[in-house]
Length: 106
Length: 118
Image 1 (cartoon, rainbow over the protein chains, first blue to last red):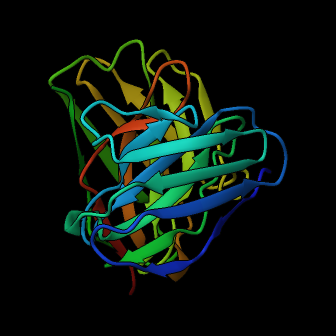
Image 2 (spheres, helix red, strand yellow):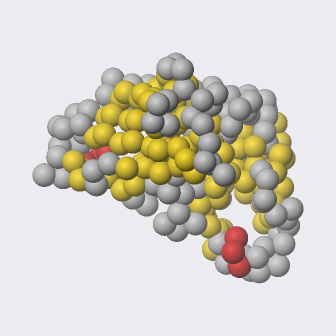
């Protein structure tokens, strides 16, 4: 199985800040990599697929980068609605494991 | 626009079978893969398995011996069965659509909480 390790597990930031969350895969997954946002009591929402492709409707302040084993999610200018937990996921091979999550507190 | 809705019992007794259904509305179940994911309270996301509309399946090895997923194209639904449940199976269960080409989970149901308790 491919293991996904996110860091940090939690992050405090202010509105207007630029933040970056990272994720590392235990083996190369090319660009079969996704980021999700989950707000309390809600289902996860796909933000970015293929490492850097923004899902339709997602604000351009979100961006993704990386390939192989190391990936990053950057939020350029934090907004109050970005308070959420973010999960990474590999879609290279089954089981399609997720990272443990990063809780972003504003 | 495609929407997914999970349904099923919210309480299951230990050793019994958890059964959930996901109804797809606003689009056809055909030509896509569909998946189940779960999230224990306060914890992360766990992939359970997926199925193709024509019947192919894949399961997480950690659950494979207890899981069955199936599809009913006539009802635009797909289902999950997890047998011999324990308290460790208590979680919010989500169904989702698998994006063609990159296997990301692009549309999710709202989730349904299932508690395993006597």
